[in-house]
Amino acid sequence: MLDKPLIGLNTDFRPAKQDTQAYAFLWAGYFDSILEAGGIPVILPPLTEEADIRQALEPLDGFVMVGGQDLDPRRDGFMRHPTVRPLDDRRETFDRTLMNLIAERRLPVFGIGVGMQLLNVQQGGNLFLHLPEDCPEAIPHKDLQDRGHRHGLEVMPGTIMERVYGDGEIRVNSLHHMAIDEVAPGFTVSARCPDGVIEAIESEMPDWFAMGTQFHPEASTASALDIRIFEEFLEGVNASKHAMRLVA
Image (cartoon, rainbow, N blue to C red; front, side, top):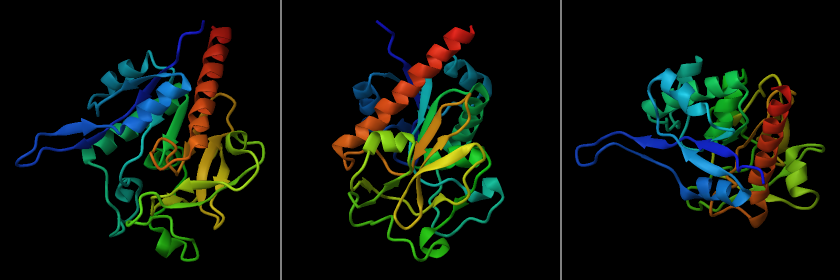
């Protein structure tokens, strides 16, 4: 029997306030989805030393970069749009260092929401900062009155998303105002909203299994079929482990 893969998860972070201590947290859907797909989740708080992050990554077989608020565009040389709700500085600094090291190690990675956006930015792509202004013809991708808001999904042939969803009408949850503009080199679009907004990407690089979704397959608003995305990720992780053993 093969050992279950160890899958890392980052956490969100809230700094101390006058009446609240600082704390890290993670929605249960992330680690429950990994468990259901056949992995063992390993949760990392926002570490501050690069050497500690390197050591923490050593035993892991893959990593899921979780969703959250927005990346600060100023870190990538852009002005900050007034609608941006930035991640806490400690989390964003950790996430960016973490993603750099994941890419350096070619550790299999699945980015969700802002996790996918960071994967794209770290690899040389960029983002729309506010869809209603940057893509005024786009359908609504965020409804503050309905966290279960859904829109259609068009999958690209021959991709992981096609293996997950196949043919037929697909609808996924949607809660974002930023999105991928230019896709990073080495990646391809695997799904779009019918309005053209990118909703999933995957690596075309033979030495790195990496993928991302803008929507949230871990959430309570996801469909029963969405867990297949985690299963596909775990299959890719296991394939990468097998390939590494052959090389060794």
